[in-house]
Structure formats: structure tokens, C-alpha cells
Length: 151
Figure 1 (cartoon, rainbow, N blue to C red):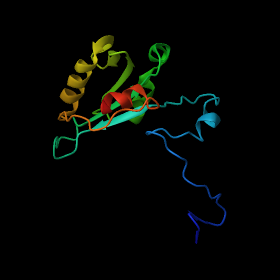
Figure 2: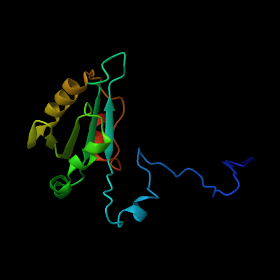
Figure 3: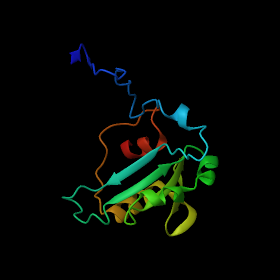
């Protein structure tokens, strides 16, 4: 039954959708899950896909990227923990962007420092995407990787 701006279901708590600022939304689960033993909580995950019209091969059009917001997070994150949940065809990378430099860990190297242009080239090559210039500017409130795609 609809009640104002929300739906009312017996036995369920009704809540409004949280406000969103530049692609970020506060998590209700993070405070609950972060301290539980045997649970690794990953945030700042990006799934990059090429649409079928651009790359019809489902084995090469996906890429999962974990953005690390600090160098410490980059060196402490074990992205292989995600491996059991991913199809073998989905490569997963770890990145940290810092003033035009990118720390990158991917399947062919433990980690290396590359430029933003090199990162763009590798994403395009890996997914078969095409590069199209962004139309908007990234916000200071957005993550570095979000701004990277917009700027």
C-alpha cells in the first residue's frame, strides 16, 4: 500500500532512499559489518563494462577495479579474496590515484606506477572500450577515480 512517498509493507520498516552526493551514498551495513570476524568488507569497487555494441565478447568486456584512497590501503588490500566470487574471465585490478600518478596492481605484475594516460590505455585495451571525452567536471567530494572518469 502506498503511503505518501514510501511504500508500506506489513512487517517491514519503511525507510526513504538516502540522499546521494556525486555517486556516494552513506552505508547502513558498513558500521555493522566492519567489526565482524571473518568478514572482509570491500568498498570503492568499480565495474567497468563495454556495451555489447562496442565489444560483443562477454569474456573481455568486463573489468573490476578496487580504488584505494590511500597508499596504505593499496598495500594492505588483498584483492585475491574476491577471486572465488568472480568469473575467471573478469580481471580485477587494484589502483590508487595520487596527483597524476597511479599505483596499479593487475594480473601481469605485483604492482607498478603508471601515468593516468597509461591507465586509460590499459582499460581501453582490456575491455575493448572506446574513449569518449567526459562532459562534466568531477566534484571535490567525489573519489579520485570518479573524478578521473569525469575530467
